[in-house]
Length: 238
Image (cartoon, rainbow, N blue to C red; front, side, top):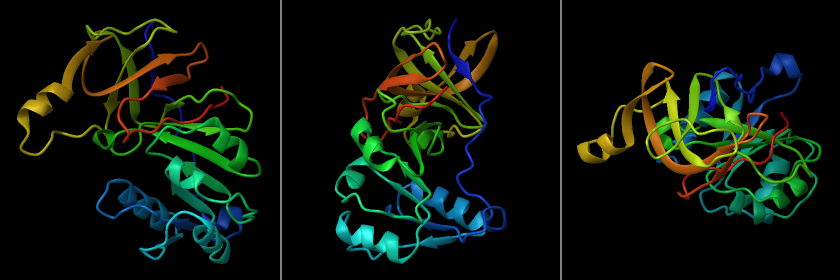
């Protein structure tokens, strides 16, 4: 059978301060012109947290680690390459570390996951930033791209738009409420990437990512990502 997963609950990345008894501090280390910061702004302020904007000249490294420590940052989202440039030091306040935007090596998970939640996020901007996630654990093996977030659907299809069997590589197509309407003033590219396909007798408008993945027996996805703007989440228990 082809893979369809749309019932997995979105992870709780931003909890109320009353529920956890600590102040929520989220660090936005992304360019404000890109899509990801707007998700961080909404989720941080919507949860009653504090969104921190580091100095614009602060690069990943010892200075950023010190900023995380001094400001008591509890949640941060970084590209894996940025995380790799940071020295591994105790950050007791940092309870949730998210990586996105690039393929994540298992070594980073082994270094940074102990003692906190380590989430790796996958999804293009055309799917409203993130379409799936995986919760990573040290020593868990080869990275996967996890399962869809709430209200998103992921299909692995062959060249004819048909679902592939478990274990067979296919292209990732994204459906759900987060799929964008079109590219502005680019009708040909819109027609190429946004298509209506009939899967399980139900027509649905989908976004064609160009990324290749296969489904594991437990429902996780493994991906060979072709676009550096995508994320390749790390392995996740299932």
